[in-house]
Length: 329
Image 1 (spheres, rainbow, N blue to C red):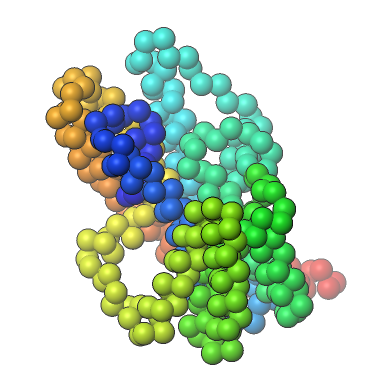
Image 2 (image 1 turned 45 degrees about the vertical axis):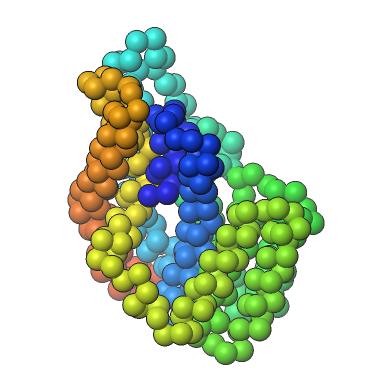
């Protein structure tokens, strides 16, 4: 919701807040750092106690694809549809032009790497997430402590400011994901705690020295996760029904809030005009609309994909075994 409010502000839909409020709203950018850390925590949980091989890593990636792709593709179509609709109803608005390469790159989360403009600006995080999942699974599949150690050390080069950022490739933010992984391992295994604290401490030092808020929020989130988990409060802290509901629909909400927010404000201002009062009313209306749309999308697309990803595991395993036998032959 903080990210959605930030984008409503940056989209030019609101101009009534004083500078102090605007500065606070810009902290919504921290939501991405928190999301990356929690993602690493959750992925580590899904793989904990399992023997990760190249085959099982491929199955893991396939399940993630079944889980994530259809809602993402639906969000692409939504953004395209709203762009075209806006060009038809808004005077002097030029119709968007998208190349085949740009659309194909979006389908496979490659637009960041290939340098295409995002159809929806929020999609960049999905590109990174897919890279995180694939690389992390392949690292574990090596079953080599040395490879894991090298990956962790290399990931520190960016928050410590040793090398410049690389746009489009996961390496500069991989530390955020690994902080979540380390937080989970620290919860489950005593031996991992000093290594995690060292890693998180180095990220924290780099964040302070280089004034890097993303790294600061990432390390703070990971340390908070560990403290809550070790105090046996992970299943009770923030266990409020309304917050759990937002968490349930958060993926759909993230994917769709940008075009829904823009369309809601535009229709509302056309009907009610733009005043300080109508801006506040429009903000409430846009939040309700975004949540309602995300809930419908969750029920119609995301929830069935979650069920399909879980039920597909035996079939994917059988397919993997047949592929291995074929390759052996």
